[in-house]
Length: 330
Image 1 (cartoon, rainbow, N blue to C red):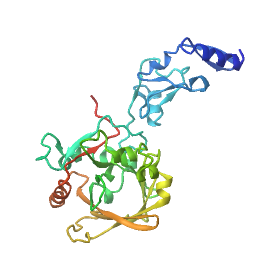
Image 2 (cartoon, rainbow, N blue to C red; image 1 turned 180 degrees about the vertical axis):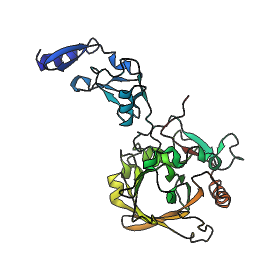
Image 3 (cartoon, rainbow, N blue to C red; image 1 turned 30 degrees about the horizontal axis):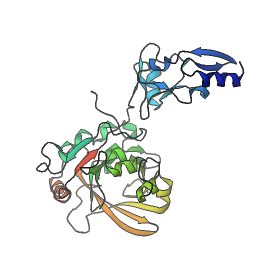
Image 4 (cartoon, rainbow, N blue to C red; image 1 turned 30 degrees about the vertical axis):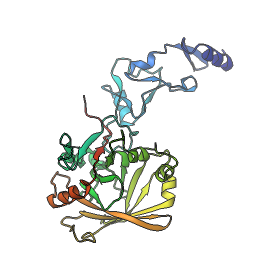
């Protein structure tokens, strides 16, 4: 059968059969074969692909067999319908094990809603008290863990935006380049207004922002991942690069350790307690913020700093969301 005839046949009866050319021969394929990997479907472009099946976006092939586990380790959601993969029922589509979130497409299926003021929101978990359940470096493979200097939960003091904290304990560390990568959608904690299903800032940093806004235009369809590139092995200063080309071209960010904040309200007690984040937009320095460690990597809360954070952020009548890459098992 010529390629032209094959294409016409596919167009005429896509529901009856999907055909694949292997070694110049046409082979009839049961269109339900993709479903042997639970949750998998045919790719829309299966007729022109050598790998025709896929798991949904932000899922990968996983399971109990070595072949499935290899797919999961490589964050691979595609497979060949003619392969033996999953024919024994050992494979399914699932979230990859990706505590850093670097390799996961943003999703909002298991957002964690918390508060810094339980008097206003008594039914919600306290943000700071519950943070150690997810913000700790032992969730990350040992070879990718960020150095102790940058571990913990940091309050973004004096920041005017809706995000109030981030967790570098979950960053993916590259010791050779002294670089930590953090996806904003899963590493940062962001305020949610009552009328929002998902905070607009989370949509922006997921590449789903409104193109007519500054953030939507600057980030575009890119998933915003910050790369903290430290200058040397003292780890005391560095630059921050973004994964969005336009955002990167119009802005510049630095990070530097301080002994205390300029207002004198926070004083360093341990290395890495206070980091100054400076920002320039179009070459003009704008208002940055001070990253203040309110909880260390072992879960110890600095009560004085936590109290200060609650007083400042509790003035806003909003709740705070964090979106994990891996949803808890049902």
